[in-house]
Length: 131
Image 1: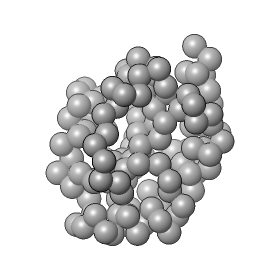
Image 2: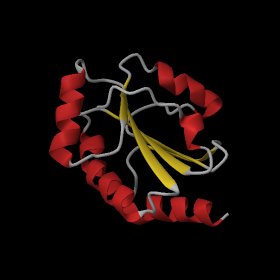
Image 3: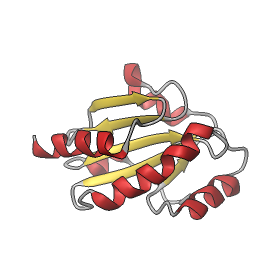
Image 4: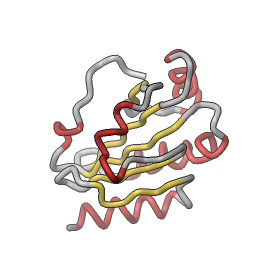
């Protein structure tokens, strides 16, 4: 968990994968290795990954979860879920949820629940990169 401010508007021109998670969420635990692998596989110059932790009671718990799983992309610690309001009608409704934003910052895909497979996520991102 990083302490620096994060503004997704700074990521315009990139495809952004936003994953909503919690360290004790079973499906979140299962899908995290897929997210880490996808983040490593996709071109870093054109793709950004961001996590939003909405349930841990302490940021230290979230940071330990990420460290133990090799997550090296930034996460927002937001136990009040305020950051999700910015998604408007596409607001992720639970955990895990993954929103994929196109190069213009619009929600292009929303996966409610666990990501079915790494190839599903990579294909969605690659299709948006090809647009």
